Every structure is written in C-alpha cells, then in structure tokens.
Amino acid sequence: IRVGTNLPIFKLKESVRRYSDFEWLRSELERESKVIVPTLPGKAFLSRLPSRGDDEMFDDSFTEERKQGLEQFINKVAGHPLAQNKRCVHTSLQDEIIDKSYTPSKIRHA
Image (tube, rainbow, N blue to C red):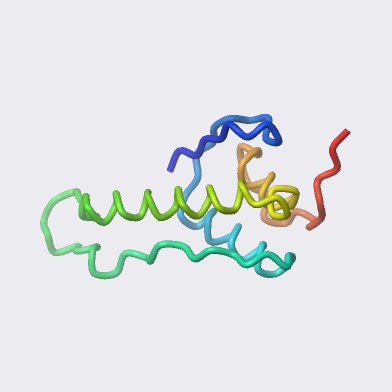
C-alpha cells in the first residue's frame, strides 16, 4: 500500500507499507497510548483461493475494500492530535524501513 500525507507534522510525504506494518502500528498504539485505536480491515481468508489456477490470489473487490479500510485507519491515526506525536506513528509513516525494535516515546519538535 502506498501511504501519503499532507499534514505538516510529517516531513516525508509518501511511503510504501504492507498490511503487517499496519498491524504493528495498531498493536503499538494499543500498547503505549491512551488513544482509542481504530480497527483494521480483516485478513483475507476466503478471498485467497490457491485452487483458482491463476496468479491472482486476491479478489479485486477484496483488495479495494482493504485499501479503503487501511486508508481510513491511517487517516484517523495520523489526524489524531495525540496519536500523531507518537514515535510509532512517525516510524510507520516516515521511516523507509520500520524498525520494530524502536523505543516508544513521543516525538520532540524543535
């Protein structure tokens, strides 16, 4: 998923993330903040059909719904005044590769 932002608090305006990165972010926010964290769209269980005989493992409508759900999730998180100062949010949106062994804290602005 390509993630973009125009919020001034974030310097990098675009990054690419996998579903597992969103899972990590949600888990970190639940663990380290008092913010009510939005849910993520579901995983693909029925949409993955290896017996289909083609290279398309995911149904197009499922993929589009998941993209929209992830967009809603990240918009709510990045737009929340308390969540947007969390290091895990900045790590998720700003770092090319997410260091999942980071030290949780708030971002200090100079």
